[in-house]
Length: 280
Image (cartoon, rainbow, N blue to C red; front, side, top):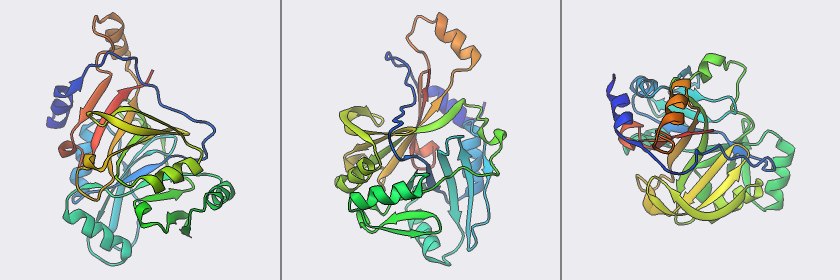
């Protein structure tokens, strides 16, 4: 058994609440898309996530010195492992500066598959944007870590790219920490999210605001939860399905919902909290 799987087993948390289902808000315009996770060593990061049970999809040529690989799900959500070799344009310069502080999430993206509805919603909310190459970014620097894409799904996606040995079926939650979250909240509400304030676990219990999107939720908490100052995205939740063997154990166990939550530390997930939650 490899080191990362031993770690995952050691930090298994048993919870006494009902199994968590992937949140869905069918009235929302937007869904969770992918998180570009900047890493210094793409090969090492790919192997580490493969050891955690993820299938890794090869990346495509980005030009310049940027290389990537993907952890993908059928709904378009997932992680993009991305690295850069030299500073040759604005984006590669950004990633090189980002990686000086270490591996970690650089952005969060949402998908809106109806461009006309997106433009209308942003206009009504008076949210100023820039658009280029199918991406929508924002003039407000407080939204500099956010972008919207039409669709992260690709004709080159294959069933084997979604066949994750750890049972993961979607990236269903994103944790964001900020002391100035108003622009992000306005954006999410403009995209049709519903919101509520509640106690959340990120991973320790704290008060946060939860925004429900088409295929999951965004949890916003105070900036003190940032792993590195200036990096708002600090964690994700992967929804998983019980295997037949796990379901049999769950049914006959005296402990409520054994193994329904596993938490991987940022030191073992390249700069972000990574939680697996059983979806029933």
